[in-house]
Every structure is written in C-alpha cells, then in structure tokens.
Length: 343
Image 1 (cartoon, rainbow, N blue to C red):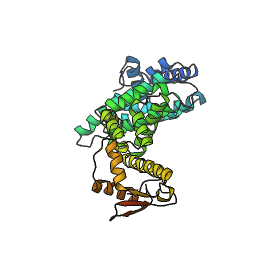
Image 2: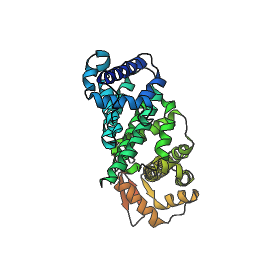
Image 3: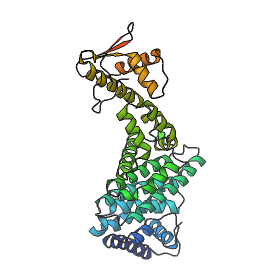
Image 4: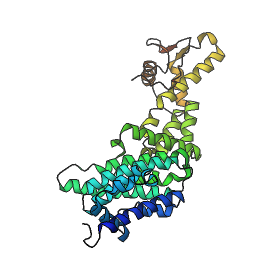
C-alpha cells in the first residue's frame, strides 16, 4: 500500500531518480548497480519507496516518455514498474507476468551489448523470475487455479542459456547446473523448440570444452561397427546421458553400428572376391558378432538385417532360404544426409 506520507511531487521525484540511475548504470556499464535496480524480492527500503511512489503516481509511462534517454528503455522499465506495483500490493501473478515481459526485453538488450558487463544483472533477473514464479504459483493454487508460472520460468531459463551460449561459452555452466539439478522443472514438459535449443547448445559446449570422454567411445563404436563398445559406453555413462536427455537418442545409434559392421564385412569380401561382395551370408555376421563377444543366432541376425533394409540403412533384399543378404550393387549403404530414418 502506498505511503500516506508521500506527496505527489515526492513520488514523481523518486520515479525520475530511478530512471536516471537506470540510464546511468547502463551508460557506465555498472553491472553491480544494475542488478540492484532489478531486484524485487529483496524488498529493500528503496524498492518499497519506489513501489509506493509508482502506486501513488499511477502514470509512470508519462514520465518514461518525457525524455528520449528514458524512452529508449521503455520496454524494460515500463513492465518492470508494473511488476513492482503489483508486487507491492500482493498481486503476484500480475507481478510475474509483467516482470517476464521486462525480462524478455532485457535479454534482447543484453544481446546488443558488446561485452558481458551486465552478467550479474542477468543472473538477478533469472533469480527473480524464479522467485516470482514460485510465489505466483502459490497464489494460483490458493485460488483453485493450475500453477503454471514455474514452467514458464523454466522456458525463460533456457532462453537465457541460449543467449549466453551465443558468445559467452564459459559462463553457461551455472545455467546448465540450474536446469539439470532443479526438481521444479520436468524437461519433457518443455516445448519442443526449447528442448531442441537446449540440447543443441549443450552439445556445442561439450565440443568447445573438449569434454568428450563420455562420447568418444560412442564415436569409436560408430566408426568400427563395434556393438559391444557402444553398449558398454551407454551403460558406463548412463546417468550422464539420462541427465542430458540424450540417452534414448544414443541408444538408437545401435542400428547405425550394425550398418557399419555389415559394411566392413562387405568391404573385406569385396577385396577378396569383388564378384560376390554383394552377397553377405548371415553366418559371417554371426561370426563377426561372436568375435566382439556378442552372442546372437541366425534368427536374431536375420531380424536385424530385415530392420536395416526396412529402414533404408541397407539397400537390398533378403534370401531367406539361403540365409544370405543380397545387397544392391549401386550404393548399398545409403547416407542419411540429415534425413530421418524410416519408421
């Protein structure tokens, strides 16, 4: 509730003073001061006084529009002021919605700055949006409505991660930890676009940081056609892959490993007898798997070959009676080239 001791002139002065400080800290790239200007949940005396001033004055937009130096940041400060007003009077859902608009505008501005001087402020924005989301969800639940703001906050968190990953790779680890350890977010419930963005950038980070150990065996298994190595890698790093949300994707690589194994057999046969290279006896595949300490019988291998042919990983047909896979003489092992495997 607005202070009864504050005059309209005092309210106007406080609002203008805040706007001047906001412009100045950006001009001088003072990240530490900026973070304090964006913190609602601190409920500091200066925040409470400003919120009271806003609720008393009721027309902060007019003040913002009075000067170009203020209006250039209108998309950040106008909804931020609304968030402060709503927070002060206990309307937490409205406060969250307004703060989210301000936060999204802040991200856009952050992209345009040449350095990461405002990183502290960005972290405060991330923290505030989570705190506001939790409070907003409690308000929704108390009114018999579905709590949904934490999920929205999770999507915002991934958006922030994407922004950092564009040019400040070394700063992303704390955001990844927030996503991986948070109990409040169910990764599978995020929109597909957010999940794809997150997985794309985490993959890039693994490469840029040369953090390959968990993946090197996967790559080696693909190159060798080594099914045993693939399964060992999936088992050894199962927890990491599950946390990263890539386990099921990596598990599907098994078909490509089988394809590679068949291709290696094909190459060896072609060197020995080019005229019969396209005829691969299932017994040869069984022996190759046995050499890898993978026990499979002819029926199992026949099933695998049938799947490879069906999914267009191998071109050819299967001669059931003779237990021979007859491969196409033209391009028997099609490249995926980014195309989905037939399902």
